[in-house]
Image 1 (cartoon, rainbow, N blue to C red):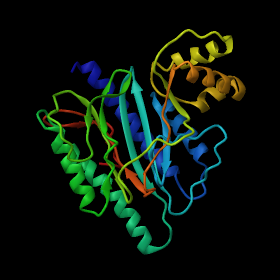
Image 2 (cartoon, rainbow, N blue to C red):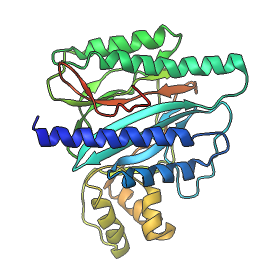
Image 3 (cartoon, rainbow, N blue to C red):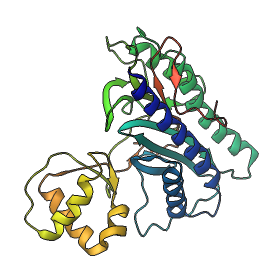
Image 4 (cartoon, one colour):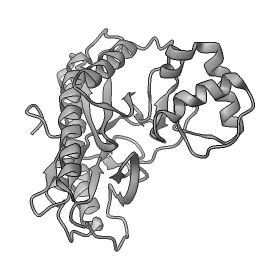
Length: 307
């Protein structure tokens, strides 16, 4: 890997780690999800980063892909298991990181269970990071993740996985399994990968729900409407990376945005990322770091508060 590219990955990771630390401090009882996400977005920009995808906070049984809409009214409450997932890029080189915040219930026994769920995905991530070296079979990473999560009495979410990262690409090969999945792939030096274990009290399987607020361009096609072309021009500026409806509403207003999104979806231009709940609606925790595969792995998103 060229030094310039490595430096971009490392810079993106540093910003992402700092933004994650900051965002986690904001997730408290009574806080507005929408306001928290807006503050996190402002922090990323202030630190000199750009968005690899919209910051998301998925609650309780929702494992991933929940991003507040422009009229979001959710406030955090006692017992919430909140997954903050954010991505930063520098010149297209991506850092992807996540952490679980548990808001205490005040019941000692219940809080102990929630903290154990949080610890399950965190311990699984740490075990996997130690294996992020050239030549490591991906099945060994999945095996290590599954072992840590199951040893604490939970299920790994088997149909979510970690992934490779490319320039302006947040889901690249390889797929990094969260269980002992049959695969012959091995890690190679200088791969940039995101490892993200999910632990569930439920089925350990997610499904795609409705009401997506996150999109990405999947295919460019001619667009007739001048208003839709105007919104599409903004979307093209995201360089193929995911964006959220809220960003478009802030620039183009709710009416024009709704019309444009409807037309672009009908034309097959956009791919939707709907929220992903557990099939049995069990609680889900998540932890994630970006790592450059080396004999001494470089965890780019590691921060002083999350070593």
